[in-house]
Length: 293
Image (cartoon, rainbow, N blue to C red; front, side):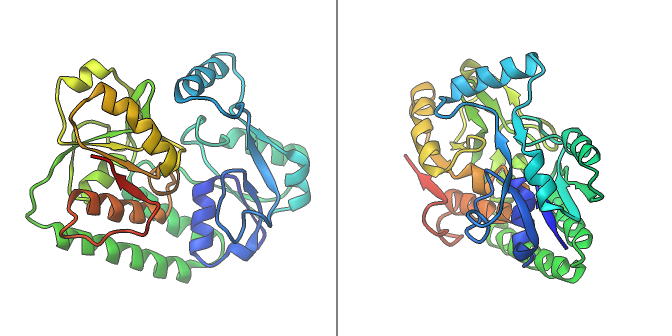
C-alpha cells in the first residue's frame, strides 16, 4: 500500500508498525531517519523561519484572523506520490494541515485514495488511533503487537509508582504567552506519577497569565513548548525561571515526546516519570529530558 502521511504523528505510527517502506509522502516535520531524506515532502509550513515564541504566537493569530493557512500543501508532489491511503487530521489547524484542505486537493487531483483522519484527544484515543492506522494500512496484527508492548510499558510505570507521593506539576505548552496544556498531556503527567496542576483533559490548550500561575505555586514546572526540541525547551525555560523564580524546572523534547499523538508518547511518559521519581524509574536515553534546577 502507498501511504501519504500528512501528519508527523501518523508517520511515527506507520514507522512503528514496520511499514516505513510503504510511505510515499511525508511532511517537513517528519524526522524519522528512515524517511526524512528519502520521501517527498508534500506539506510545509507557511510561517517564516527564525521567529521567537512570541512572534510565532502573533503570526499564527494574525494568519488565522485573516483566514490564511498555517501550512502549504504541494499538490503536484501529492499527485505524483499517487497514494492509496492518506493519513491526516482535523484536531488542530495550528499543528498540522486540516482535513478539509486534503480532501479538496484529492478531489481536484482526481486521486482515488482512502482518507483516514486521526484525531485523538486523550491518551486512550491515541492508542486507539494506532489500531485504526494499522487496520487501514492492512496490518492489524502489527497493530496489536505494538499496542501490547505500549500497554505493557505503561503498566510497568504504574507498578513502579504505585503508592508514591505525587508532586504538583505545572506543564507549560508555550511560554510567551504561557499556555496550559490540553488533550493527552495532563494524562501523561498523571501516568508519570505527577498531579497536573492545570490543563484540560481531552480539551484544547488555553492561554493563561504569569500572575495566575504565581497564585498557585507548583512543585515543579515541565517546560514542553509545542513543536520544539530539547535544546529550545531548555532555552525557553529561562523565561519560566524569570517569571516563577525558585520553582524546579524540567525541560522536555516536546516535538518528539509530548505533542505527537503516537507511540513516542510512552517514551515521553517514561522520561517524565524518571524526572519526577528518579529512584523508581530508569533514566531515558540522552536528549529527551533535562532537569534544570
